[in-house]
Image (tube, rainbow, N blue to C red; front, top):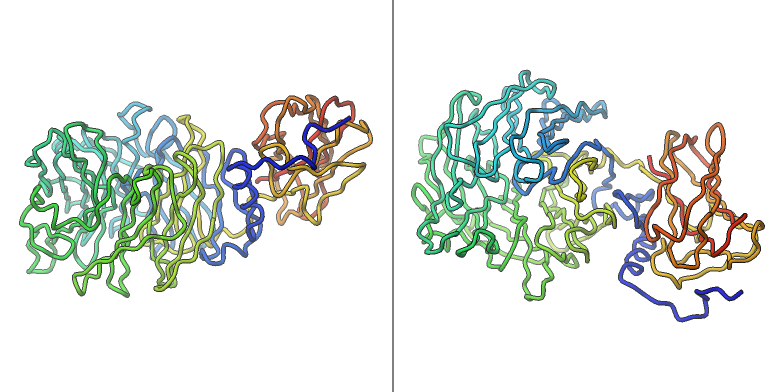
Length: 584
């Protein structure tokens, strides 16, 4: 019988095939095509990204677990603990903590009840930790009353009290920080054209508010104000980045990048509370339409994700955002650096990081070595891609893919840990189309052990082939450089055994990868030899091709004691042996 995909036939290439092949051959990283975030077992390629690893924190995230505004996490040095918040089941706010010394987590714990409907993504929580250890959280507003919660005990996520801040202007897109004992928050007011700064100096018992941006004189019906960067403290000032949607419709593109600051009253008798542009041009009590030119640091047609990081050693603020510079629908990631000492700014494009939509997320941070890192989602898909960390040493960029794109996910959202260490630098929320069962992952050097092993048919070890199998690249979608098929012949005499070398024992999800055509076998036996027994699962290779398919969860010991075998016994049609994944 002649195989419908002979190796002598010219290989048909595809974007997805090229993507998978490139990932599989990159040093230390494994190609994937199925559900879930993928991290390689090797560590070499991640060296330029601070040896970042990956650990799942919870499956209880929901759609829009994080938002461009935040922060969603903060590290407290005195406690050696990172506290984090996210949008969880039923769109409610949840909190967790990670103890760096004990390498353990607490939670998730529900903070309160989000009054917004599940389909409204505008209510993810933001977090700030007070000097007294109180955890402060904003959540649950979209042109509605701001919800506020605080922990009942210092540095503890287990107890909360909640308040409706109905005495304040309606809110959307909240960001917050604590400075000199005062809680500050900034958001867009319900009328869309106002930016409002709120504050409380008594642990959230009472609040005051003021308008810091008034765009009503722009001449359009909807010149909307979007604070899209975290409110943060830089040298005794409150800094924020924002964009403006200029036009008569509410959903007009968010254009241009702006940066401003508030000289917040504190112990400094010279603090005047005024708003200043990025170069410290005094704008008085608020930003007006005529002040936008002074605040503008970059011009571009559309962006959603804008955020900044402060480098105290260089006294520089790095503002990161997307820009469709060529007008071709391909957004590049850019950094505008504000030199505070000289009152100047400069812009550079981060090389080789393109994204197909401005909705993809990106965050800058300063790592433990003092270098600038750009954490971004970049790739060829609409709302999704690979998780890159590009590191700038002052002269050049070095890029590494820390997490490979998953075909079953629409996007991954990034949240940087405020004041965070490389040990836990960021978090990723997988963006599924459903409202539940989404994973939240921690990224950091504390998590350098693998969460999975992938054994590919072309691997030099761990693969035992019995009988004559043909190597092919004819069909789209495969892991690595090629896959094997049985030629629809020699039934009952052929098998491929995949044996992982697991660094840790435990319970692993086992997944099989195959590609699909009409000629595939519909009843393929898969033998799983696990710790304490064996099991045979039958899979249909005429469907669900081009993705990882979970066949069960099994206990495995560390090392090479167990395996998964693909056989062609009793089959009719071509049996594929490509790759097996073991994920814990």
